Image (tube, rainbow, N blue to C red; front, side, top):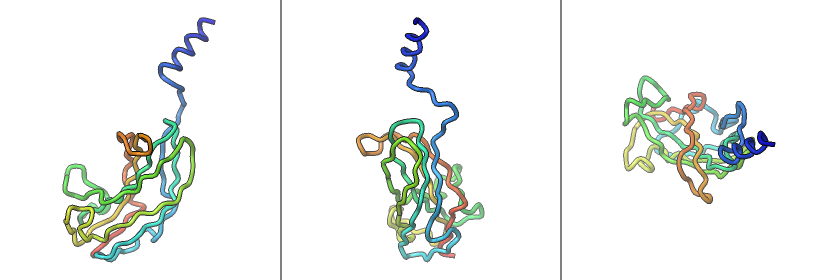
Length: 160
């Protein structure tokens, strides 16, 4: 009886423990196809199927940010030591609930027109995507819970 009370007290204090569970996000498909050269100056809508797994909480906001990077030898990977290597230009925010699902969404790249970059025009560079989980505060984004690394599997070149 004492062990049962202790277990209940611990559950109420720290919540359920899920072994080996990890939140994840994966792009399943994208259009236009990865590797397509993008025309600078022309906005373009990307269409996605994204698979997410949320195990750490009941709900969250899944954001899929579009990252625009300067043209450089390292290609489509942002450089944390270079604060001017690129920036998140726009994002789509999707409320999600605990579980594992595929969702369809889209996001528009402004086309290196200065929109989303405080007027900066790169001229040439790369476009990539960065998924993140945020706290869901009544349908609005709260604190960031997790940021996933961009993937070079879905890298696009523009202006070259």
